[in-house]
Image (cartoon, rainbow, N blue to C red; front, side, top):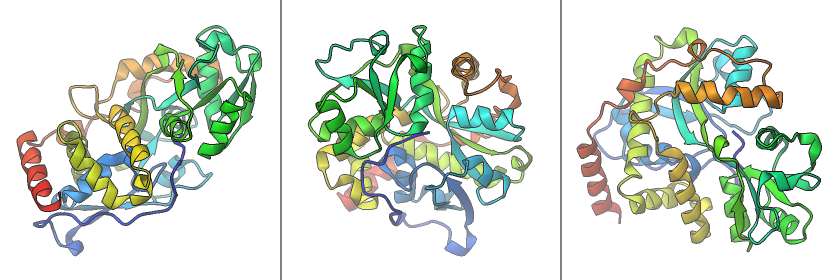
Length: 346
């Protein structure tokens, strides 16, 4: 779930939704914890708020502060969060530790993490990293680097690592000065590098690209209790995702208003959105659907990397009970809504 913050942090007020929604006192609050506040990286939230979709479903989203070292699953267990965004390692580690959680929706089905080298570098593949120093944006990127090295029979002990932090200029300087051969990070980090004058080439092993990179999870014993608000929440999220498949300009304008700090540099904002769309738009026929084969296939990599001790049967934690409802909406109506929003706001 590591997603580097390359823009000014801090919560930003949500955009005001369109008319016709339920009054505030009629809304059910859904408490969400995810790696960032409202952000381009998770634009379906911003878009669904801008178009009033959450309110139409009778819910309002309260994004909890996420800058914490406490595992997000703990917020589910103590009742502070109704739904948490987890990455695969967090999910599998929590289940292995006995946490009774259900993964209910795949937010991102393409991994944001990757391994990048400077364009023109002699490093052409993961094999070439052996004996070199690899930069980590944060220590949480170590497990992905280990998994990448495992694909070619290497281990984390075959490289030196250094944690660089999330600052774009610092990452760029490390590459420019030749202090690192590559960086293990995520999509926002590549934007930070490009904005700071460093062109990158990705050498991420293909087998690591398909991944349920971020997912929504709830406590298993609350699935029925949360059915109405979660079905509405996920349907609104799916609608927000769908908008980016036919009107990227409208999505960009909504984000400029809702998260202006991420768009102070227009080029960076556009790059961030382009990368985020590639990660957020579902590859499955049903938006957000659970990919049992992918979850099964990725686990040996995590076992080999030491992230989990043994593979876990996916039926122990995958639950698609909300997926049909999350997809139960008219695409034509969403397109009409966006057309009306554009006429009023652009």
